[in-house]
Amino acid sequence: MLMKTRIASLIDEREGRFRVDRAVYSDPDIFEAEMAEFFEGGWVFLAHESQLKNAGDYFATRIGRQPVFLIRKKDGSLGGYINACAHRGATLVPYEHGRANALTCRFHGWVFNLDGRCIKIKNEELGEYDTADTKSRFGLTPVAKLESYRGFVFGSLRAEVPPLTDWLVGTLPWIDLMVDQSPQGLEVVRGSSTYMVRGNWKLQAENGVDGYHVSTVHRVFAATVANREAKTAVDGIRKTEAGRMLGNVNSGAYDFGNGHMAIWAQRTEPSTHPLWPQKARLEREFPAERLEWMLNRGRNLYLFPNVFLMDNPSSQIRTLHAISPDLCEVTVRAIAPVGEAPEARAARLRKFEDFYLTTGMATSDDLAALEATHAGAHGSAARWNEFARGANSVRRGAEDTDGGKIGSVPQAMTPSWDHEALYHGFYRFWKDRLLQGGAG
Amino acid sequence: MTSASMLANTPAALRDAVQDLLFREANFLDDKQWQAWLALYAEDAVFWMPAWASEYETTNDPELELNLIYLKGHASIEDRVFRVETGDSFASTPMDRTTHLVSNVVVGGVHGINVTARANWMVHSYGLHGGMTRGGTYQYILRQQPEGLKIAQKKIVMIDDKLVGAVDFFHV
Image 1 (tube, each protein chain N blue to C red):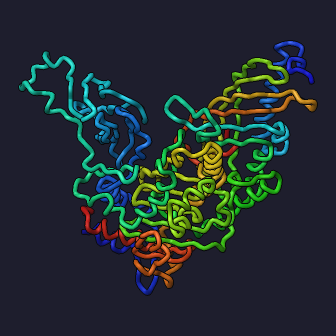
Image 2: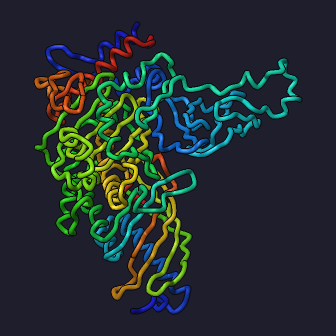
């Protein structure tokens, strides 16, 4: 009860304000409640199907703090298991990615098939077991729920969750905008980067859909690109569009319910985007208003609690693993349309490297700002973060006629990515779920 | 055109010339003498740090796979210096202190005006995240130009992943 009273006090919506107590970023008890309720108690993103193409391909990751792996079974379906031998618990798969016909524990040599059944106990006949059917007692523990939406694989350790498409609600048309870019779907590009952020996971969630920082934090990126392009002739899809960083473009900020959020901004030079060479094909396949969203708007989509699907200068899956209140592990992967021409793929990856990496020229600055925010949040005598922008321009559901053109029905939206009302949905959902959940 | 072997009359003298270049590069980075550092690179130089693709392999096709840094041409390398010099980069203000240790320098082959070399590196840095050490290997292609030996290509493998803090051109 104490915890629930405390959680209710952390969001202040009195007198038309929206304030969040900065303790949400640092309190270890709140973090434990989030881990139980969100990361280990609901849907989380796990992988893209292209990371597991063939039978026996596996991918090791975590759900919350629990080690899991996904594996492509012989019938083509995906299995997901706790990554621990059913015998004495050693992790089963040694690499992040690999391929196996069967899973042999490196500790005592027990073997499991791709369906998770134990098929060999080393020296079983000498084991003096009290039953003849020992192996049937030792199956791997499956991830309770595993579902995909158009190649994006999600899992839940809690069985009592809504169907994945109900959980993702209004974000489905936004996912479709990415997947429909190639008739063959999307694929993860080889290579990834992982970085440790000294900041709470919710600051990652906020930052990835924060349009308001772009014209301050990334004006140096815009200036750098302008300097480059003044010196060297760059055109077409190799050119870098920086118009959105200087402000004054059409944009929007979305709250989809269930904690999901998104922002978009008009591309000032859509012809620089790697998808542009596909324009004629896309015009034949999709209505103009859908193409407007797909081709002319940069989009960042956040799916609560642990993944961003970004289709902005380049295209990205950004996965979060909350480690502690003060630490978040982030992995970024490039995702691209299958069958993309080499020159478009190269342009897409160069834009990714310029912007989206902690070794690059923009994400590095984002992370420094995020870590500064986290450090500042420890100044608990100054209690509140303010999320006031956009409060007077909120549109709900069908009032968003713009999103309605692609079948998107938000819980709320405001017509500027400089606005902060999208976070109201995020934090109300966060509070409500923690209040309904098992937090003591 | 002179050949790279004409830089030096003996293998030992060639090794000295290569080492001298690598050590000067490290010192320019640590001393933040960016213009002197840039002057070591040829006009068409490539500065490349691949990403990791598995526990053992980095990416190896810089055009069609993901890299941590892939800069083609002197102007692209200048971009990185421009950005940190503006004072407007959140990650670079204040800027970390660094010390580069470059060792195990092995001169590979001489191919016309080019000479290949490999070295190991370790960089200790200090900044907002405290003290930090990262390391890896360098593979160079150096080119004998009329004005002296220049860096035509530098491939950096950083063995670390799960990176803490920004990793810029001067951290590796």
